[in-house]
Length: 413
Image 1 (spheres, rainbow, N blue to C red):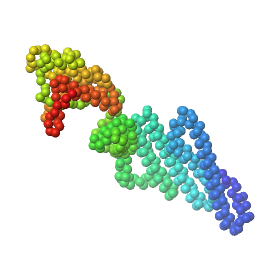
Image 2: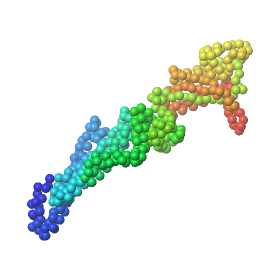
Image 3: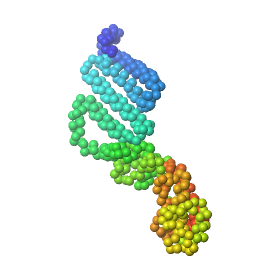
């Protein structure tokens, strides 16, 4: 660029400076300052052009997200640094007449060019991750682990090329020499390699993705995935704490409960039991059936043989061995209640069953499906159901088992 006038410039300096050694010194210093000035000028010009260009592109809806991500990751700034490098590359002859200094400057230039290339490539990779995390359609593909693996390879190759440039050896020869140190390399990058394999399994099998709600009892983790990296998965728990779990452990060592499919189905299971005092369970007399029939919904429920303990409603004058129990009527009422309850999917399984009796009484387990998946409305529906059942149970002459001060107490409605 500037080398066409170096000889006239030297002759001009020799007219004012003596001896010749000082002429060379003044020439090198002034040429270096001139290169620095030209480098700064070209860099500022490149920054101005990139600013104008990005401002123009950001006004277009098709490109603004990509351009904004590239700008946030300093892609355009790193590109502008190539201009000062080019200024020096084409003006090495100004700085020295001898071959050795030019070789040294050339090596420095090539090392700087390799490092800058790595910065530009790293910026592009970070931009890909940025776009992936902010686009809902692509969040199911957590590519950050793969990008981190590519970055590790990139840094490793950068180191090899820099050493090759500094020593004047072939990069392939250096790579061949590293074969003997492969065991040490495997030991150093063991976690990264196992994490990469586990991350690939998570991604290709769609086991986990950002935004999933997962539970890991072994790690006391229960929350939403906010990041998946090469070696770990970061989870924001519902108490707002953040847990970091090794990726490899999620695939190999531990069982993970993923609630994503529950959210995709649009329903969430309710499964909870209330414990009945067995001493309060008895066959129904006609008077009891008449009293229960006055409760809203019981009359209709008793007409269903399946809902009423698979036994037909009987109006015998005395309690028969195969007659209906007050617990059977209560179960029939629960079926009827849940079938009409707002927020419960009546088209899915509604199950009311006994569990094995224990010293605490007879657990009566209710299983059904809510039509919401978010925790707050789900818990509201679940609480409404069991508030109602606990309050209505005494109307069927049933006592709920409760321990208070080591005594059984009736929970009155």
